[in-house]
Length: 314
Image (cartoon, rainbow, N blue to C red):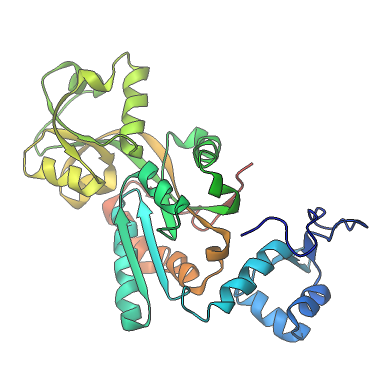
């Protein structure tokens, strides 16, 4: 979407009107006039989260730029709002959520999940070939900064939002019966690795953990390359490899061992106009429902408490 709209002048900050710039946020009365709706209908849309709005101090505010994006989205007549294509990082819980949502939709909408790894997923998002990208890049303690820096590599990210799905436990997936006392053992001795491709968040996490211990990925004996968490786990489960970088959940899904290395943030990047699509809101609701909570506990390695948090990219 173009940043300069009908006036060609940047909007003033929320709550600050200027003679030369429209306010970035509208009151309910102003938003109703802008959309040519009565205020009662506007409040109904806001309370149902069908329209971009924020309730601050008992007062509803409506971001002008997001309202314009939302209005343009409605003009497509549902041609875009009935589908959601997610790419990027692989995750067992997100895969289960999208499958359940797709089953419930039947022929009324399309939800698809095509894991590609974090960096390839962001490239697909930047080229508008996907609606959302799942990503993780480094430890949870630096995730806000690292994810923002990662997204800034892509010019289109000025129009993106970042939504947290979960915190995940990241480490090394181990074949059944393999007991090791640390990552140093796996790197220093002749264990067979199924390594993730360049640009995958799991590989980035492993490389950081190895570097902190005086090792590099080149010290690992790589026998196969895996292009998703679950492909890595499958290679280990078939004993084509002894270990692979991945999450506790991916290891548990295949009944494998796991060496924990730390926690990470697992987020979704998506264009701001998609944030308020009903289908995306349904995805967030499904990701936190009782079925998903139960699966997250069974797999282990998830903290869903930050689900749905919209993060700043500054």
